[in-house]
Length: 386
Image (cartoon, rainbow, N blue to C red):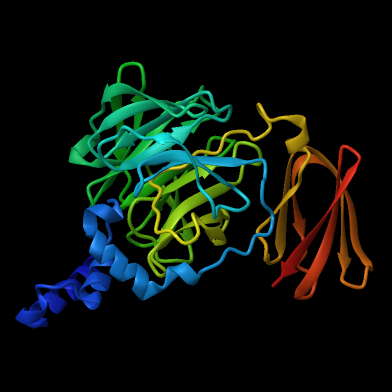
């Protein structure tokens, strides 16, 4: 297991390291420590000086997001751990964080969830403080203490849209992980069962009520039986995940996204999840140029409470893209056309929906123009097919 092997490497390093080097942080020791699987905040594991050293080593400041679309209609709500700020970033381009307020939680908010309508939101920190949140104003209301089973720590929350927003919770002690439900009115935690996972870090529930989690010990996605906590392996997520991170369903499209912490580049990333094979697609770095961490995320329906001028804008993602291109707007997309750089039309399709996914696997690598029509208005977008 990842946890066992990296711990051995870390212990071996400590054994052979010269005593004279122990007074100052050593980058090799920091890298070894970063490989030890944990659900904690990076700020619980490293000092500010050590985080600066890691950031300089990975040189994440040079990473740039590729998504050209800005000002999309779908906002991801979350709490950023380093600043303690509750706010939003754009689902199509997560490079900028918009602070709404400062979270009052005294510890790392490693679990949270928002209802489809955005009228219900909860978060739990690592000290078991349970809050409800008004996502529009950022007002936190302390509900009480909730106690996870088996001495664990809550690492993920999600509401079931098929069961009156029933609140499910995943928790872990670094060796075992449990599934429970939480009653927000009574703060009663009902234990469902052990999952046999090591460090289950987040939860997501589909529009059909199917429950998924990610184990950062083996970097794999699993489906969970909501009644028994039995698991079904979906597959490898494609990157080295570590530390607290979140996952949620986009209420508008039903797609699952991760606010991931990619240990290979030591930074937070927004990723789109394929529930069939567990492959994740990078959308972009969250808060470009800043080392950030998000222990949870929520994506309420973007078409609720949005003015008519903004909802007609179409967002395309990811960009650059592979074989599949996603389109989204706050009102139905009437049609979409694809042209090559010579102006030749390659595809013309009627959509009639808020969201659509185009199969462009037949297109060669290169640049293309996408024409979308919404409310009789046309927009032109440029994409790169990899």
